[in-house]
Length: 159
Image (cartoon, rainbow, N blue to C red; front, side):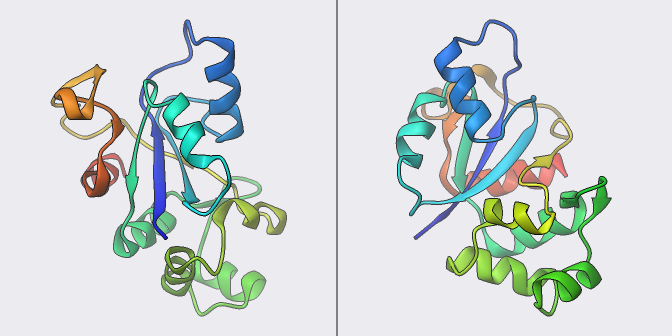
């Protein structure tokens, strides 16, 4: 059961209403925001297929997820997500254990919103820029759509 990282690549201008609604539901409301979801969520694959011309997605690794949580994870009040906060509020030993439980499927990141964790990550544009077109699919030599484990390299460039 993979854990998908979804990153919005294209902006907000001229987005059709149905795609805009789907991006809103995925909590991808701005360019260069990311969310993580389990494959087990009903309808996720259809949603990803709907917005693949505006996003890129793939399976995230545990080490990359831990670094993403450490550098870009936020709680309410735009404060950083820290090991101390995770210990006090979630009862876990730290961000490493949180990443482990997210990858294994024991926890769902978007459901931690009730505890005060923001369900998305604000990323930087990739260091060095995109090497290919952001108007073409990854399989056709672009940056959009499904990219498998190559999403990890992109996330590390965007932290």
